[in-house]
Length: 138
Image (cartoon, rainbow, N blue to C red):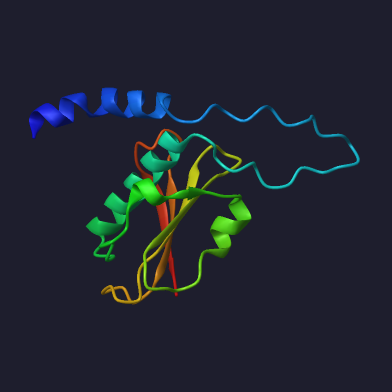
């Protein structure tokens, strides 16, 4: 287990390097068009790291994350992450980058889990090094 721990950062860096090319920069905003939510996160590796940190924090707080897979997390707009996802038979994870560079991770547990389809909004620190807050909703 220690060997995997030593190699995990290198493997994560290599895995994220194999992802899709970053999207071209957006056109500059004009005074007539106010800025809206940040663009969806395009770095799949960063989205996965944020989702993994959120799942770790939730499991330490007895939120049932069985069936939740950080690799299946989707990058979305911040408003979509705050709105969450409907209850369903499978765990759903959506991740958004906030304006302060933190990650907002919405985790909706499966209806069959011990959390009975509850949702948690987890704020993950910018580099995925920890969690700064968790809000629970139904």
